[in-house]
Image (cartoon, rainbow, N blue to C red; front, side, top):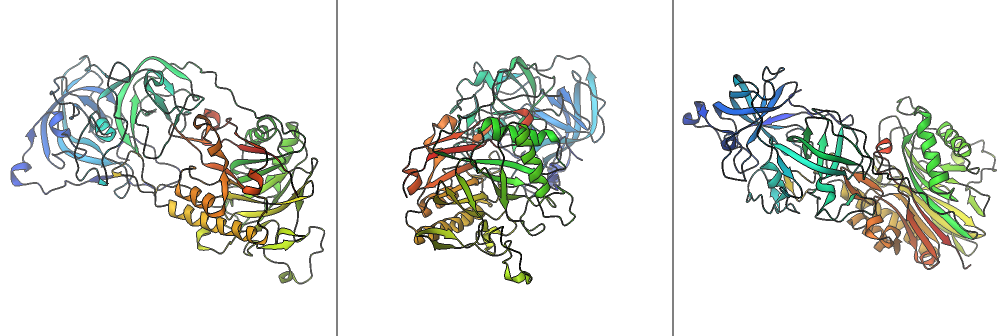
Length: 618
């Protein structure tokens, strides 16, 4: 493969070279003797893209398996032109760090994630010859990022359009241009602090202990806000040297240097030596126990948990429920896999997955739990092929909660199977029951045939009672963000989000169902919970909350605590619990329990959430 980067396991991606923006003239066909800053230019695409160049001088600063970086020891006076560049040699280069070299070749723009992607390119020289003039040259000094050095602008200010095709190039106002002007150069960070956990060979950090970075989380990360990609973050990459396992708040003391590269949606600093790590002492949170009379409802994401997973994953999920959430009455679960995991063998049943999870909860000291869900059709709900992830409810019945099964589990199975509805495709409806709103199916899928749920997990609704008071709870896992969504540090600004319309459509369907419940009983107690895949300020979550008269509980938290996921160092609230007015008016307390998303051993997992409600009234 051309370049350095790993291909994500979940996507088939082809790296491409983009051609010159304009045809080369006959005068440009002959090799030009130029310096690196002329090749880089004050732009995202080299003004010499496609041109042959000769005798380009530099000092080798880092070496990869198929090329090397070099930097001009005699920079120009412009801060808008990089003095570093990657030289692609195809095979292991003969040049070594500290060699003074001259390179012949052709300028190209390499886009690691494919020509149709939203990622930027890396300017490079495809070498035809490399001459070593001297050994042991001291590399140019690294530029310092952070306090006492260079600071990126706080925003990406390119307006609308493709940043590679036009617009002003301003390193003082635009973070994309700022980092582009450092591409390929030696960069140094001092006393960096981890803004996210290490994952897949990458580690997001904030230079200078996070000085000047905002808004910070209460536990040391940085919050993602609308229109702010947090350019303060620097993504460290292990392409040249291993990185230590790191949690949010851990520190990398002293100076750490590398070369700045770009791949898969981010500028990344490839350190040339493994940094030392000082633990920050971040502890896993635990919420308080529910008091007598309080109903505790929580969310938990299991990311395809199935019997093929290591026992440690079941143990971690059980500890989240027992120790972190203090054994809530009801858990809206997303991402439980079928009995055969990733084996695409037609299995959709989940009883073995459930039994192993409930056994792990018991072993962790928790109470007896039961489970309700609806088996999906094989490979009809998206996700990894064969896993058949689904949403469902874990619940305990020793404190006053009762699950209303409809059809009743005690009813005999009829001799004529069509007499019992197929729960996978039959939509649940709200109907009057005893003066309140009930359901035709419990658990039942909400509009499973609606196009909004094509290739996505279908939400399920359940009818329950809490000490005799009826309520409706909806468990969700909406369509996720995918590689179709443009990266924050990509060529199209602002980044397009082509998956968001799916979530907005799903929000409208769920809101319509909640309104149908309220039409039957205006004071119905309704809870909507789970992985909505978007922040509380997003259009889909607002569509659900405003369209159905629900209150999104994360909004009640201080901003520094309002996150359930950490993505490339950006903390954001993707998991939600929403209450109808009839429940929000009761005394309640919402909490995000931070025990997963910030830790290297759980990187990618979501923090669970919980609400405790003193349910009163009829």
